[in-house]
Length: 165
Image 1 (cartoon, helix red, strand yellow):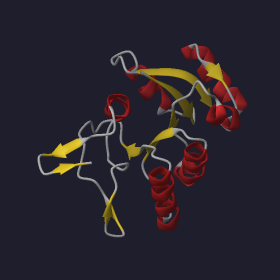
Image 2 (cartoon, one colour):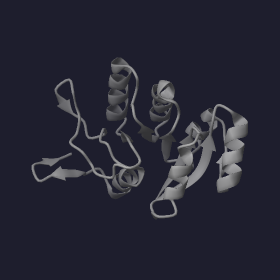
Image 3 (cartoon, helix red, strand yellow):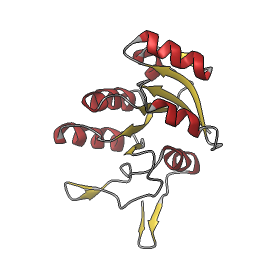
Image 4 (cartoon, one colour):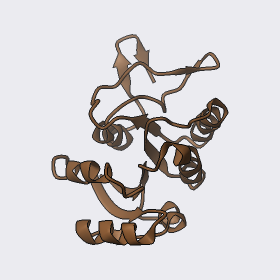
């Protein structure tokens, strides 16, 4: 089981919190928001810790950052988390700029971390994305629980019989 730290306590957060009732491989332990009162309310409702963004990213009890911030903040939050050695699951888009997305590709590849991005209602794994002629196993559209299962079960994800990442 991986411990999840959620950043961005807006409307979509409730969907993710409800998911932990149905799956045994995710456990929310903390949340953060740029508005501390929103984080506190969320933490009280779900019986988890309310932290600042900096605290949650550096919390040793957090394995995965769930990035539910606005699209303009996806890059900054994901980058901070990856630099701190955390796996990341982010809503789409990964970044609003190609160069920033490419930087994230290099960060997670260099640090042997997973960075998933996707939509909560698309549980299937899709074909890996290709960047600069290279396939990267860290980018696939998957739901949170599928992403966490792959983080828990190991580094090998079979996409089809011809490709093992």
